[in-house]
Length: 298
Image (cartoon, rainbow, N blue to C red; front, side, top):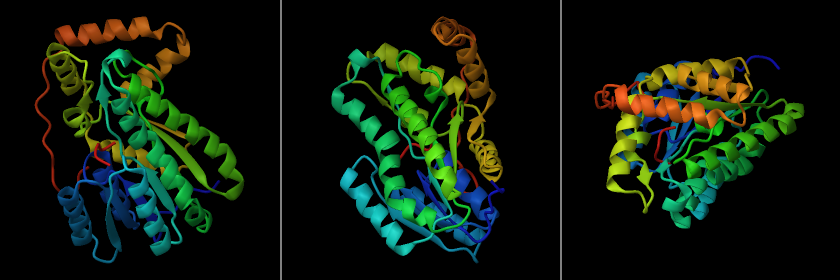
């Protein structure tokens, strides 16, 4: 399959209001993509769209407000996008949310909320927009999973379930769409400094002490600049890579799980305990408002 051509094509990005989604929006615009941006956070979404328009006045930039936890709203907006953009060269299902807590600490409604946004929304959007991808020669699909779509730590059961599901969905689609000339990439970021840590939900049964410890550990681990993650992802798209690992903290766990598929949990537990004990607290992330960038938010 030939390299992906960005210039002149239309790219749809979900979760575009912050984090990786914001950074991808700017990175794609720099490569000449017209943009269709989706998110639930209207002020941030409009700020990102405005910044892209200001920096790239020759590009068409559309924004759509949508809560991806709402199936009906998601399908309605996806239908509008399809009607107004019948040819799409790139679809990036990036939006994601997090939920901390063991399985016995989260409610079924909380679990379903994560699945709806992280997995089912990507399925709904891809299913609706697939005709537009097929209509555009050299199209590409990207689903942003997570390092927790490669490994499944305790306390992340809902998030891991959603990201493993997205990974399986992506890999099967890759095999189905290759004959149509559509490339498919599964992205597994880790340690990216986005709003997902600070805005993640906590299971109803999680104690205050467990919540505090989880937030502190998250702050220590989320260090990679979203713009760097976006550059890695864009390079992967251009080269039609089937899988992109963004950050050393994605590459190392991937290697560990390959070497110890049935017992990597012991290694993970030891690493997390050491980090919790010894790592200095990271500074609070600063959220830039322009050319910056699994955003949370849908």
